[in-house]
Image (tube, rainbow, N blue to C red; front, side, top):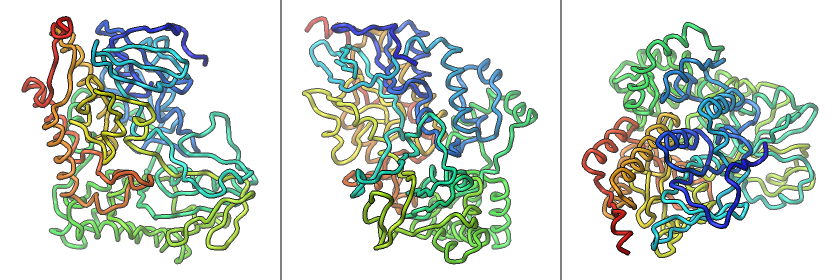
Length: 548
């Protein structure tokens, strides 16, 4: 699809709001703002909508939140008319849903596709953001909203010899749009995180031989995915309003059965029976088996060992099974993966697991790679090496606030926000599901809708009251940063060397980035902030600008 020509380049055009990204955040925000009569520009570097689902098209890619919940709740007609084909829908169906939403609400003509925002600098005189795109266009905007997503900047390790390799290379987060065939090929997958765990079983069915290079074993739970039934869909559609409201105050923004018992207060027989039932049901709701899994290491160990025993029972080769057993972190402290036949894949004759935890990949060669003196030959290499999460997409834009302060400079020791929404010295800059909000530790669409509503309502509040600027107070930001860390360190999460703390990016500061006290608690905090006259924020009026 060619770039939109609705807004042709000009010397300097001005709008109320510039939005970066046409994923689920950008689409909903665009819809809400346009309904209020605000002028907008929305820029998307891809040639279509869908955000992370536009880029993540790797084999087996699907959402690990069930589709009746991983969907918009802002429009009842939309949620009644759309039919999901599976309980956990795949990437193609999620993109189809994003396309449907885009066209249903007439958003496509208001998006500039194949256009990146390169720079956004705040001009303190007129109190506007000056924005430049990859086409050379310059735009001014009162408000600037980064809606580019938390996991949309792919991370490829800087392997020695990468440029020497002559075979095909792929990254799960930047998968080609045309079909990829691995039939008859010798394939390597580097990484065993969530994307790899979904892709490996599918690639193994096609490749002549698959070698998986694992740096750290991960916990994963069977999804138990199945075709959507009309009866199950109707249980949601007949009570969506009530269910959506309840979701918004659940710990993870997902309706699931939570057990308010400690894993240590029940007998071993009851504990094992509970784990077995949760394993049979499948999905990330497994972590809700007991109420202290994420706060008590002894309780966590009981669940972790249960899963390790499931791995040992599934994988026939005991040596391979033991390598696949995660032992370096408590279960749930890294992203809990959801799979379809992952561990069973290692029983195939054409699949080999190579442990690189102690002896990392030495280098890539012309026809493969070398590990600990052993040479491997591959026709294709798949990098399942994750993302520069939470901050990477923000740093891809040259964002500068008051006094020309670069966002990268302010965040040199780690991201600093108030509510994960704004950052001091960067007026009228909003971040949808930014660092310091529940974001990746929640049902993303639940959190997206809450943030978009908060941003849109704030912009409308300012317009209706003649307010030109909103900015967090430094003290409020400091308190929030401390609170996010305090909450995290009351749990087991910091015990994992995870991307939640930026551990997958060399040199990235170690600061726990998402807010994990819960979606419901976070929502109530935001409601209180607004109810108390936007406590922790300061405003500047239009009249003050006119006087200047």
